[in-house]
Amino acid sequence: MTSYGTEVLAAEECLRLLASRRVGRVAVSTGERPAILPVVYALLDGDVVFRTAPGEKLIAAVLHCTVAFEADDFDEAEGAGWSVNVVGPAEEITHPDERARAEALGLDPWAGGDVRDRFVRIRAEHVSGRRVRRGG
Image (cartoon, rainbow, N blue to C red; front, side, top):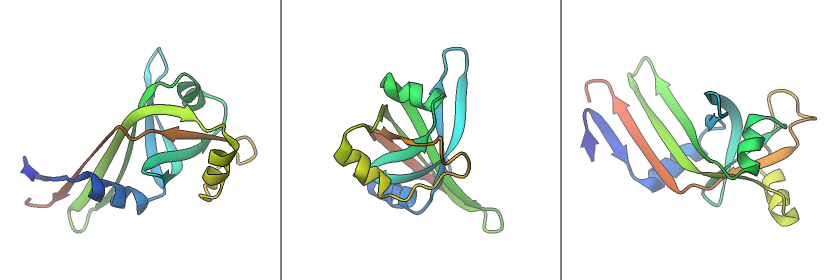
């Protein structure tokens, strides 16, 4: 389906595109202001999983806050790209079996690997995406 020059993507295509990337952004509300924070992520059973340290993202997970996640790709030369959003409750992964599955995803953080020892899962309650092409 096309809307305002963009193609609306089916959920299956959104998940395929998400699986093709490793870096996205998590949007959380900190109470005072929203924050959009980059994370290295992977998919686990269709949900977004990332490692984190104590801070805003982990607080959101412990409180089971609804968060937004976004990943995208854009080729400036081609004038084409896509963007996928996932919205759902965040939760810390604490069960040993689930934690082992998260650890097996190979989520090596860019920085602070020793302190980024907690795993957060965003339950994908709503997945949406769009593809854009120059002149589309």
